[in-house]
Image 1 (tube, rainbow, N blue to C red):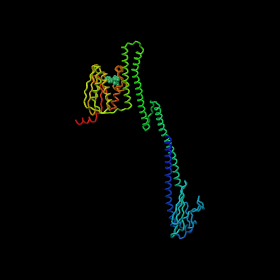
Image 2: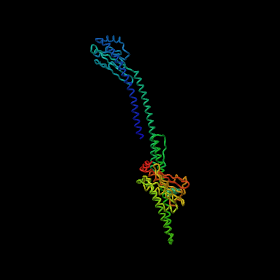
Image 3: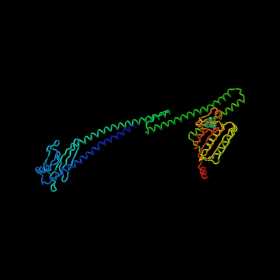
Image 4: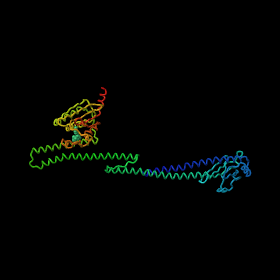
Length: 466
Ligand code: ADP
């Protein structure tokens, strides 16, 4: 990439400097030549028309006219007759132009101009025909060597060339510096990406400046942050899950070993042990079911959403929890507005309400109450699950939806809890477009508030009746 950049820039700068050198000098040369052509042709025409008064051109006649006309300061003026013989010459032997240099011949009725530039001088020649009564009788040749303008143009050329070389070197160095810096930063980023790909998620890159590469570096850092925290969560989840699974498994192992190792175990004791094994197995089953549910939700499997009426669903949960509530001497009090419908996965909703109501019974005090209130409010279905139980300390409230988080580990374990129920509730609420909030209930207990968008049809009915 660096090489390609450099190549493109060098080619671009090279072409620009060549153009910058050639264009102004050729233009100024053309301007000088055009001026010369105008001046010399003018002078030639003046001389030719002065000579055209003579019927025939002779050396004396021409000299006489030339003395009268007094041409300007030119290097050489010569006049020839029709045959090309020189009749008048201001510099019979000019430096650098030997006698032998053949003269260009005049063309009838047509002036000619020649000019060349060789770096030292503009060498110009103009030939104008001398006509008498419509026929060519001779020609006037004016030669002019302009050293001064040539020198000026030459020095401009030299200066332009040195400025261009300097500019070229400076541009190449700048491009080299910029591409080196850019590619070094990109190489650094690519190196960091390789390290992350190989498994080191702690690698970050320094964010310098505010350009696109800095933006890329920042995005990379954020992405790696996220990867790292996801990986950390995954690791913690696996380790917590293994830990949770180990406890009932160890219990089963201990109980079965005791049965296997005793030869004359009392039948009643054996029954008790076997029943304990059954309970531990049940706990394992519940745990694995919850783990499976969470993993399914994590992998983004979306259950099909249908129209669900909430009141009957809440009543079903209450009915199923009656035996547990009776055992704990807890009562249910419900206030359910009929006809509150939302669009959600029914199985998810059942799991949400059941888990919250079950917790409200489990963490209640003996003789306590569980309140379930449902209503439609501001286009939302609002369900409150409240209890008069032990409550959740303020500092634990922000963490209760975290997987395996328990406020009181021993108590939760003792009543068969896993610390997964509320995280399943939280994920299921979000997957169904709702919101959940937990707060302390005054004077005692906990309140969970759920909000789901109402089904359109219900909202419209309400608006009509207003
Ligand atoms: P668990 O299976 O342990 O009940 P949950 O995820 O359902 O797991 O709940 C997490 C923790 O939050 C529980 O261990 C308990 O300490 C606390 N908790 C949940 N619901 C209530 C409640 N209604 N009252 C008091 N504490 C609660």
